[in-house]
Image 1 (cartoon, helix red, strand yellow):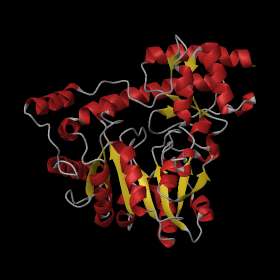
Image 2 (image 1 turned 30 degrees about the vertical axis):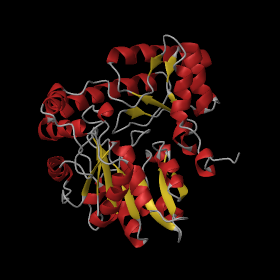
Image 3 (image 1 turned 60 degrees about the vertical axis):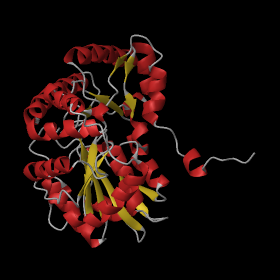
Length: 386
């Protein structure tokens, strides 16, 4: 019998995060600092709206693009938060999480052999999605000494005549790095000069602890060449609702909608009704959760630095990316030994690309009590390594 499998899929490595958690799930009593998921429940008024939509029989397909009212609220939200103005009917698409939006954006824009520049360390789906869409990945490894920000020199050096798309994720998973307005302005001229399309994954936009998030799409001459990816999982603690969105040039959104139409049909109806309530009345919930994350961020950063596990100061998301190179172990070796010896789960930095080697990702989307217990164990582990 012939081999029915696609070599393109077979050659993609499984997620480094999933691989590690398969091992961790078998160890009893382990404390996890590995999952990038809010530990808060979805705020009650948002859940209640989802329940109410079911009670009213709102259980049918929506428009492929999503409920009109939801797209209007997304447009209003992005305008008041980030000075982004989108036509809700032509420039907004509701998706099954931000991950589907990333996949569709790449499939709608990549021609076979196009080169896609991926800023790393990065979310684990970018590179596989580029490959599946027929593109070629060109990575830019960001540097700890630059606080994992992209510089114009690094971008310029990565570009050639095949370069078409730049994928950025700020605030960043796994590093917690941000790029402020001046940082972004510094690379805009390079992007325009080389006529690049930007896919800007801004799923952590609300979780910014120094000032306000700035979207690259809001800068001069960038809206028409940027696809903004966002969603409800991180800011509104709605991971299981599986809802995201993409906003961008109407010509690109139309083609993404076509893919979405044939592959998915529409995002979950109940989730869409709940998301309307989140955007209308969820600001205070987001503020309170962000304050709590910031308290945890400061606590974890101080504890790690005090024990000699140094990290630059993360300014967004809910991750810290400490440097473990001085221990002369790979990221996987360090993470596995920590799990086996002290039953603490962290994620090897190498799961986020080669430039993550020598680091580990710690999530502080956990209660202070769990963080204290885990950090006490990590401190014991570090002392035993010396």
